[in-house]
Length: 211
Image (tube, rainbow, N blue to C red; front, side):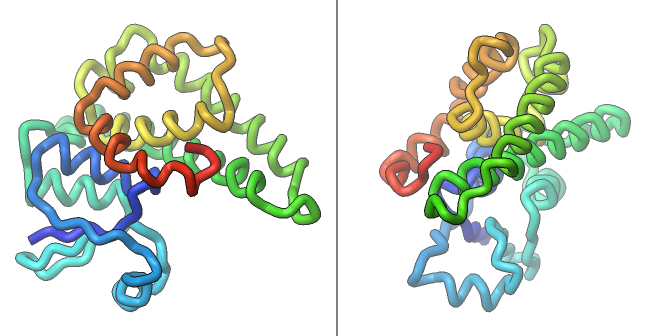
């Protein structure tokens, strides 16, 4: 049995949920909150979620990209998230990192919004916004006429892109300057696996300033 420890509004939890939902992989979900936090930390003292427990194989898997590759290897489904062809696989992994970098940079903007005025970092926020615009520029060029970020089928990179762009464009709007990203994001929103992850998290959007 697979058990995913995460949180419904965590972009990184969404990333793994998308992969699980896409392939209809059976799993149990544990929300990390005040009732489960101690158990979670006992399992993974770094405190970074999600983590995946596989009781059948007696494995604990951490880091979202590794979790999805683990699912590809041991719980394959209709969609393979990392292609077997090495060059294509490297491209998928590269864009996965780009979108994770977008998500990490966006966190700076979001967390600054919820700080007391005396603790805010306007310089750091402006620098983060500059980096985000640069990331948008390279994504815009990559999308081109593709349906998804590496070709015309979903991959690990799209699992990363969906939550990063969904949250990212709410905190650093595209402002009409990136039409290919805007169209790509609409395709991602129409992806049933991603739409399900968003829908399930809606009741908790009020606790997150960027939702």
